[in-house]
Length: 456
Image 1 (tube, rainbow, N blue to C red):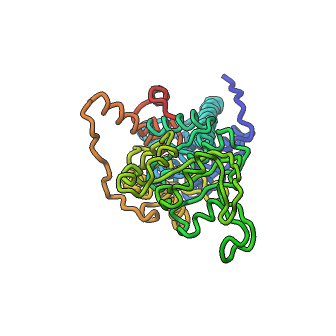
Image 2: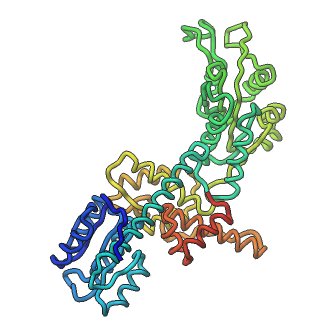
């Protein structure tokens, strides 16, 4: 059988300490971009530098070529470096046990000596085809993640429903209230409403009502005329006026002083403003999106928030779950943030197992914002290619799991299955073959489960 698979310029790493075998394999794959190594340390450096699609690994390497210990250790290190590598182990006729052990560790396939070039080329070509398919899947996954509501990353069903809700209401001009803890992505959803809406050609103007002193907030919102007060040297439009034709995002609307609530309500009802010190009514056409982490109904009861304003700004309310209530999302977000950091960097780092464990069990009181900051810190502080729990300043020994509140066994099983799939895909950074191995099922089963639970 003569196999004529297209392998031109495909990156291949051959790891073998036999010069004769090196020469034979290099000739066999002459059209490929081949690197050759005869030691574990050198092979790791070449793999990290050139990122081969396929690796041919002889398990018998120095300093103990008679046994497979060095080769199996290298196999594990290569997969830790990049679990996308397709590693084909080459063994002797009497070494089938170690070949099977290599498969258990994550090798793509094994081949027993003596080498038949045509058969080995077929194995390499199949490995490369699978590598390409998985690369395309990862690119599609990343592309979908990046375009899903301005990068809103989630695998949780309730959050997926929120994304669909945002897509439905975006084309309208209805006033939207976003409810959620700090760091849950309220501004990101507000920007999605803007980018998917009819006002996207206008500006997006955001103002944090809690970050500006009360005596300055009125002029920030409504603007002022020249000479309206000391220091008013020129006519200055406010944020509302600047946002005309676009979207005004009022973050932390719950901190808006009562004196300004009445003035904002008048604007929302009549769609006109007056600058401070001015007498002219200025019409402004825009969409208003508000957000808060506070319970506005409680504030209405204690008299610190106007009920009529509440109903005006919350024609539709969207409640965003905190990260601790979205199993599997923390690791998905961590991989996403890490990928963003590495886009413009030559160095590549991965999350160590203890970091993954710590991310999954941490409570995340600061939600996605806290997670992003810790990933940035870990990326900078990590001295090796792996970001550890210590680099993230997290405790990997903590158990953050909580009992499911429902006793319905079918629901519990389905929820557990969904969460396990999302966590596995997140841990394996979108590599479905590795995720299937982690879950202990076949790749087709993973595809079926992804379709069953509509996991994006």
